[in-house]
Image 1 (cartoon, one colour):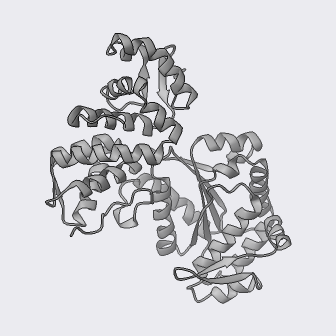
Image 2 (cartoon, helix red, strand yellow; image 1 turned 135 degrees about the vertical axis):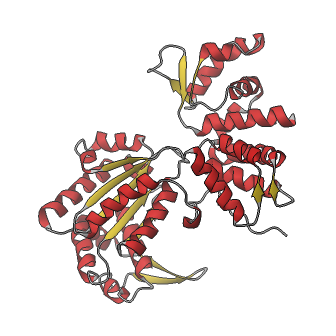
Image 3 (cartoon, helix red, strand yellow; image 1 turned 180 degrees about the vertical axis):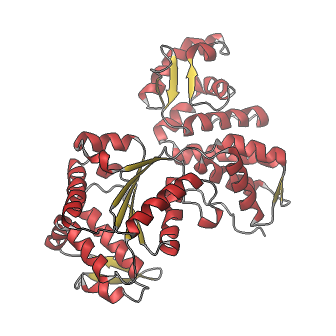
Length: 400
């Protein structure tokens, strides 16, 4: 029986398999040191979907706790657009992170009788104050955080609050105004406020926040996460497979690296699919082909919206997409180049195809390059299309 897969699709990479990102880690470590010395810091960790933002945040969280003696909490906010719920989750995570510490009793005193122990899959804590209490915490958030810092100043040098997946909050004007007020209040009322808040989201969310509060973005250190470099991708695959005593051939590694395209989300899916296709603890080129083919279907179903997935796999457009995929993985393309490889029937529907892709939010006009040029909204799209094209070429598989 095979060991458990070393890959974790859909979840942040375990810190032990974290590779690359040295420059980002070094920069953020510097901000956290400033936090530990009493300075409030605000970071916006930006990057496209699947680029590894949450994995980097998970690594930073461990670094803050072990190396800098900063209390780290990681709050996931998918679907949250309400300020009170944001604040409730922040304090609930603080309680959970503190529950196994010697100073938990000090923290617990601040929250009265609103803490519940929940015996569900192990003991956990929930923070469920009445409406007026949470409204007060939202209004007096800086003071509440300062009280926490004072109560634990002998044990912690500061606190790191990671707010992940802020899509809903970025659309709410009250969040932008509340955040700016919080930062301004702390700056004008406290000589030392050792708090670092890290927002995580796609680059477009910064624009949404700016529209609501123009001066807000000036307070952030913006860190834009790019794709991993080829040596980093190679290192990840080698390290992951070595943990389960599997060797990987150079040709297989090259294929997996190419179709991962430096995107951690793709690396995880391709690695996991290839691991499951292997039968002899040795990944060769054929294993990689089969893994990529299998991963293409999984990626389409998991990461593309159903409407997009159905449309780009529909019969009228699939042959066009496969020929586009043969051009390689590129986030940009132009109409003329694609037209040159299409047959008469494909050319006849090509303009409708482009129009539909724009309606679905898959591509936009590439203004920088000029008329007839397009670019993909998300790097996942060209990678997925290339993977499907490869599967069709090498396996004769058809999109159903």
